[in-house]
Structures are given as C-alpha cells and as structure tokens.
Image (tube, rainbow, N blue to C red):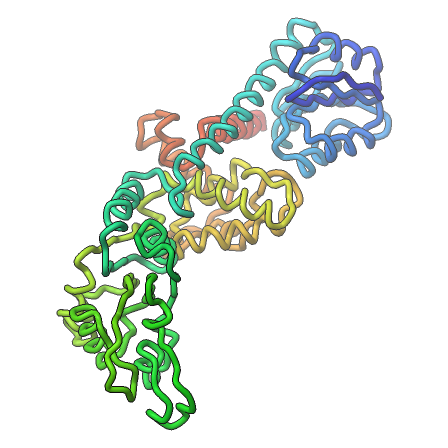
Length: 462
C-alpha cells in the first residue's frame, strides 16, 4: 500500500495492477489532494471506512472481489463518495449497471492521462465546491442565529426584528403559533434582551396545573388558607420577581384566575391566596398559546379584556411549512448539535434524505424536525444521514399531506421522482429555483437528476 502526502481532498484507488495505480498517482498528483492506493479490495474497504475519501477509483475485475461487489459495499460505507469504475472490457450493460448501483462514472483501460485528469478532475472540482459550500453553510448558519433561534426567511427575520425592538421596553407580550414553532425560545430571547435579563426566566405551563390549585401556584398562598396549606408558599409571580414569567398555554388558564391576572397587569400588584396583604408585581410577563384566542373569546373561554391587555404586542411564529427556505440551515444546526452530543461524525444528509425532509409537511414544526434529526443522528453510522436513518413515515413514501383515501400508493423513489419533476415543471426547468423550493442545494439536485437519467437509459436498453 502506498500513499502521498497532501491536504484537503482524499482520493483512493483500488486495483490489482500496480502499474495502473502508479499511473493514477502520477497523473492526478495535486497540492490539495492526498492519494491512497491499494491492490487489495478488502484493505481498500478498510481505507474507505477510515479515510472517507471524496473520490474512489475501482477496477472492475479483481481476483478477490469484483468491482461491482466493491461498489455496493462502498455505497453502504460511504454513500457520499463518488466512485469511478475502470475496466479493460467495456460493455454498455455493465456501464449502466455500475451507474445504477451508485457509480459516478465508468472509464475504459488503458487509461489515457488526459482523459483520467479530465474525468476525475470533474469530481474533484465538485468535491471542492461541496467543501466550500459546507464552510459557507456554517457561516450562513452563524449569520442567521438569533438568541438560539435560527432562520433566514423573511417571516423569521421579521420576528427577530420585532423581538429586538420590543425587548427593551415590554411589560407584557403575547406569542402565538402552533405547537413546536419555538414560542419558549422567543420568550427567552425577549427576556435575554430586556432590562430584566439579570433576573430569573420562570416557565409556567398553564395546561399542567390543576384548576383548583391554579391561583395558589400562580400567586402563592399563606399557611392555613386551605386544606393542605401547611406552610407559606411563594407562587410563580413572586419567584419571577425582577425577571420574566413565561406563561405557556395561557388559553388553558381558568376564568377566575384570568380576572386576577388582569388585575396584576393593570395595577402591578397581587395577593397570596388567604392573605389580605398586597405584593408588588415587579415582573415582565410573556404569555403564549397555540390556540385561536379569538375563537376562545367567542366561546366564553377567555376574557376579551385580558387578551387586549396581553396583546399590546403580539408576536406570531410561523409554521415550518411557511418557512421552508429555513429548512437547510435548521437541518445543519440540529445535525451539528446532535453529532456533537452523541460524539458522531455526522455532517449532513444524502440527496434523497434531503428531498424526503423537504417535501414533508412538518405538522409538528421545528420541534418535530429536531426530534427527527436527533433520532437520525443517534442511528446514523456514516457521515451522511440516509433515508433508512429517518423514521418510518419518511421510508414508506407516505407523508401526512399525501395520505388521502383512494390515492395511489407509491414507492419512495417514485414519490421523490414525481415531486422533483413537478417542481421543475412549475418553474420551467429552472434548476436553481427548483433547488431553492425543494430546500436543497443545486449540487444535490444535479446528482439526483443524473441518477434518474441513468435509470432511464437502463430502461431504454431493456
């Protein structure tokens, strides 16, 4: 086994002919390319697993293992690598079979230096672009992080601007949005940027408090005020003094407690249950709900005057389906976080995994995406998360918006194919725009289309 010293990119050549390996090493020698060669296919697989090369050159006919077997095993170990097969016995059938099994190109021996440099050079250049894009993605992620929130869509940038403007001045804010959109993160951002940032941020989940104990939990109580009150107790309001009280699921607050909270907001004072003494409410209050407050008001479930008092400033968080352009940087954010947490080398998604996530409706919003990628990072045993690492709904070909009665049940590959083609048709074949709508980069789209083209050729040959 031989190797050359280099820097950023890695290329591995596997061939039982030492002269062929020598030609590869001499012809492709570049300052930023580290070249490894081996005549042993099994040693080559070990090198693939250890080095994670961007490009692998494989001879089709070798004694211990033929190139097709090797290609399939490399695709399992390192699906992100471009594998190029070369052989002295070319046939159209074997070329198409190689591409169907994941080969990126198919070269014929004897290898001409100019051809080798041109054909391999394309994949090295693409690998350089991917590395640059990965670095830029990291910079984009940093540029679009805001107080542990991530977004670059116009809707999220508007949310960030509103939080910045409101935070220095607010006493009460209402945050609305579906479950999983990040309401608590927005509340924490308001707290962190407010004059109350030196105090506590106190979360209070209104839906988790028993109705009969609500006033005691919120305002506190004195000893003997009710059965079981064996000692004085501070409530959420008192505990949050000097800081911010985050009242999540405010729509589940009992009506009697709503009237008392209204008094707190109007007069900035409250009483512990069972005590006549007034206490100052020196606290910022951020309320949040995933329900329609207007519907609750019409049904008599929420006080209209409390709503108007809470919503002097209202911040609405969009659904993930409304901000699909944020999907790539959210994916990068969660993958980086979970890879670090689990001690994995996961650094991204395969093209078909990207497309599966991009076309999903995300009823659970960002929280669901976080859970999906946490699950995938835990299971992944390669650098790229593939479709088999995702939950079942992404592997069956049925997403929530596709599961309509009477619809044709499709394979996952067919779902991808139809969706990509539908988007391309809608944008008149503009691949840059299609990639943006799909939430993937252009290189991913080109690789997907190249694979589809190879399958069509195979179908025509048959």
